[in-house]
Image 1: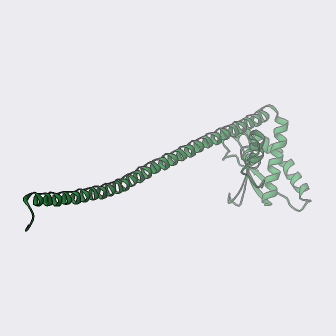
Image 2: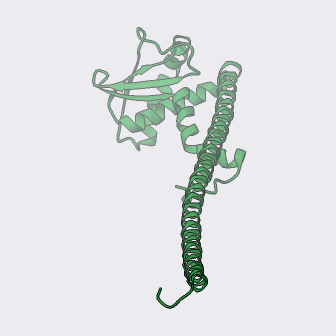
Image 3: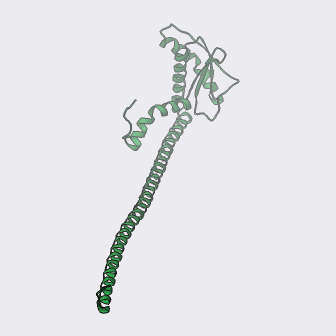
Length: 230
């Protein structure tokens, strides 16, 4: 540098070096600040992404737990309902068994009443068939009784039909009803092509089916889910 002393030159060089260092320092600070900003942004994005994944994971876990809880509650409720229905059915069967025992007792201990019952059951069957020739099946222990009441049944049948129908009753002496039945009759016509089961067991089943809703309501109260009575 012309016209400048060594001291001035050295001073100028130091000034330039200081300027360059200042510029470099400011540039470093700018780069550091930008890097810090980008780091914080990226960290925030990563944290937010991780938080979303964690929340989604636990949301799914909570939903799975809630679903499992609902399934368990439903299973417990269904099991409870089935147990209640089973118990109700057992109670109804007990009631039906008691009715059978009572009917057996009446048949065994009150012959006069059973005789009238046999007449009524036979007349009911005849009124359904309206056939001139009928075969009657009974238990073997009831065969003699049935033969005794045949004339009376035929006479009453003619009377209840206002003399429009007559019937010839034949007691089957070869084919008897099972002895374990409570009693009653099975009527057939046209070579056993038409049959009427009017045993006490069958009547008890019929009455049980017809009265079951009423019996259930009496035993267990009205069903809140039932909209119709018929």
